[in-house]
Image 1 (tube, helix red, strand yellow):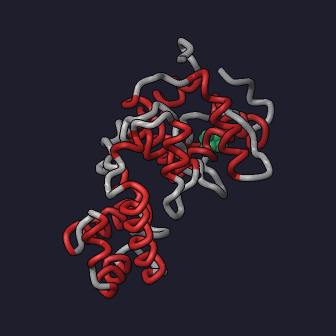
Image 2 (image 1 turned 120 degrees about the horizontal axis):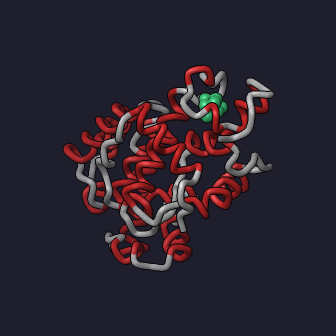
Length: 236
Ligand code: SF4
């Protein structure tokens, strides 16, 4: 349930003023989201989108077409998405196999399950953990959860929503627990929040040497006030 005038709303408003309103996600089909994540590795969004388009055009994005595609074509497509193309081509086949064997080729039913069950089902796919499963539930507008990628998670932790724990999973959970009471049950806002936090983590709040001096969030940020400029005052 959202709190009125809450600090997360202020964070999102400032990020949107800085970066502009994000475009809606280009892919919202659950299987396509999984393929998009795996068709490329360690590349920017633009190159990932190109690799995915190559998959769509040269092979198709239905499980049957992926399983019947020549291995060399899958590798060629995966190569457009960066390094380890053979491994990722094999993973595309695994994804297609899981989609067919576990779900009859249609993930529509999974999205209708209660969120905990839906997440368990989605985690049957290779390389899909809680963050990936939650992103699928959010982008398909199946469950109003604030999914976070590693960039968005880092931003929230530095701002003071949650804290670093021993494992990534525990840190992720800590941030989500901390923001839960500040969320709107509004898919459009949650998706924008995911996108804006991610972009901020990529551009200014980088893993090393965050550009705090230029950051529109510094008056709200625990890291800035505690590490970069101690004595700068509390959160507004
Ligand atoms: S002030 Fe620095 S640490 Fe805080 S959100 Fe901005 S860039 Fe990140």
